[in-house]
Length: 147
Image (cartoon, rainbow, N blue to C red; front, side, top):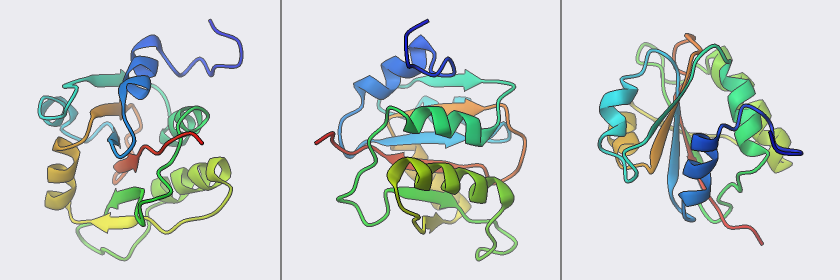
């Protein structure tokens, strides 16, 4: 255990976050996502699995140490629901609230179609798969710099 570090931030997850550079995308996905397949295509080829946790708990822990890219107009992107791209699922609402709390302001995420999200995720740095089974818990979170 480390002082002031959320225990959700496992050694492997901390390595992944610390290894990222500004502009790299962290892929955070729910239990339904084909994370093993996508992770093989990422820069790090790393998959960190956090079973038994909610998406918002994991993102809250990540955002406690993760600088959000404030140079990018869409530093957070989500997978839009296939049946209704304008709908904001509860899991996305909860995670965006955690990101807003950490960032100090609310934001409207960029929305990607399912196929565009998969392509963007494969180009990310690494994948964190949460045990949360709520659909559309799929996020790309771009790393910024600490100033």
